[in-house]
Length: 180
Image (cartoon, rainbow, N blue to C red; front, side, top):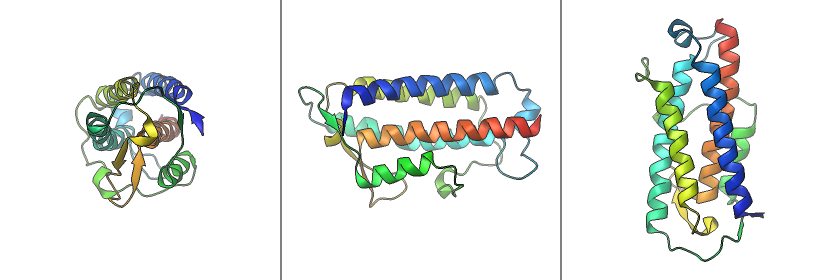
C-alpha cells in the first residue's frame, strides 16, 4: 500500500516529465521523419502518438465518469492496486512487445496535430488526478475499456495511462533514432 497523496504527486510528476520528453523529442523532427516506419518494422512516430491518443481517449472519459458518480471521502488514506491493475501496470513497464487491442491500433493516416492532441490528453490526465483529490481512489471503480471483465480502481487506471505513455516514449526515442 502507498499513501494516495504520494501516488498522486508521483503521477503528476511522471505525467509532466513524459509530456516534456515526448514534446522535446518529436516537435523538432521534420514531418517526413514522423511518418516513416522504422526499417525493422513497427509504427511510425505519428502512429505511436495516434495510438496514445486513442488509448487515452478510451481511458480518460471512464475515469471522469467514475469520479462523477463516486462519493467523496474525507482524507486520502492509502491506495492499493487491484490484481488486474497490478498486472496491467507491470505489462506497461515490461520491455516485452505486446499486441495492442484492435480498438487502438492507429489508422494509416494519424490525425492532424497528433502531437498536440496527445500532449493535451496528458494535461487532461493531470486534471483528472488533481480533481480526484477529495476521493479515496481505491474505492472509485471503473471497467477496463478493452476487457469488460477487468475492474480497476482510479489509481490503477491513472498508473496504466502514465506507464503506457512512458513505454511509448521509449519506443518514440528508438524510432526517432532509426529514421534519422
